[in-house]
Image (cartoon, rainbow, N blue to C red; front, top):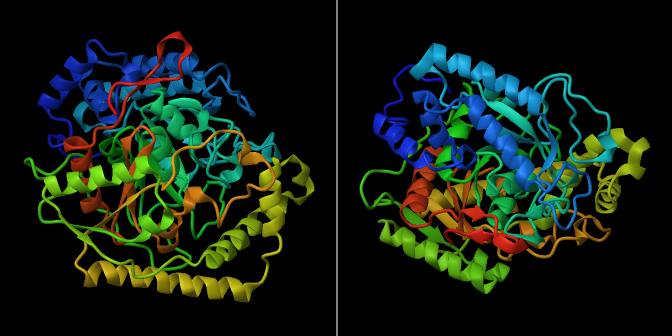
Length: 508
């Protein structure tokens, strides 16, 4: 959001100097959102220069032109790239920065990738599916309209697992290891971020689709409280579960993007009163060496029940130790309620079919697993089971909200995924339909049902953790996550490896 002050607490003179020094020997495409914002506002870097650097990086690292199927040797993060549109927007952003200077919106001139569910007026919108081949958006998605009004620069649409109905996005390669999945459904956004093709991206989350690819690709994401952001102009999967959200390489950059996505009061929510406005979001950790002091962080029995891979278990232990070292009180508590997978299936399938029935005459164009999912969803047309499932869902959310309050818990810590990224290939074959039973969503789906805000951040390049808070607690949640990342768990930085190897890490 544009602010009326000098943004001293966000982009100070010292931050500009530090960013300038860091960028002196850095390709602009490697900059994060806040680093780039500091340079843009100081006029040490132009949006045109930054945009050209990102477009050049896409040409260098995407693995050729965007394709529908992908290939074993291409990252293929992008569904479509819009170079001339981006250059034009960058020129307008530079004019605005020159005119408004410190009063320009923080995000003005920053390039972004949009998951291929967000409408950009006059451009294709396909959900990475041949079902929507030839579809052109008539108007902008509400969230994109807000960011565009602040001067952000759309580079293109990133690939999604087809119609967001899965957790692997197999047409996209994981930049760390192209033989493994990038995660999904926002896999293209996470891969583009990890490979430093763009500093910011939009994703969405229905059963974990912001957080899963962040864990697979070593990036960060925020799933806000359900209903905080509008869904208008987005291709839905299941609207009472869908969450728009920001993705970036750091939590602080995600917070800057989320701040720009907010605009006044939240929209009406179909299942509950809209949450309170999020207010000002922190873009830096609390002061001092113990930014989590005074917070109670809980660990439940859910991760153990999910069966963690050894590397995931080690990552969780490292994150717990970091929480304690940074001042938090850590408690082990039993979870108050478990997810009812049948209820998730009923809600997801009923809402998905309500949208996909309009494509019945194009059913042969779906990928096999998505065709199977849609076919199964077509059986969910009864109001009574759906309403009963929504009622039990409300009770589940209430049980968790009371647990946070009665146990005096500020944050819950979990692995984002209990498993590691697995081999690419089978995600679109029949027998891999999305929903209950998918190991990718074993820990993530409950937080879509309850609507609680979650920040996902990496611990290693293929294992991450999530911090969960009660509804509406975005500000303290984000502050704690930034503190954890900046003081103890730095994000891994991907770099192309020599001699054809997939990737190398500068920090793990």
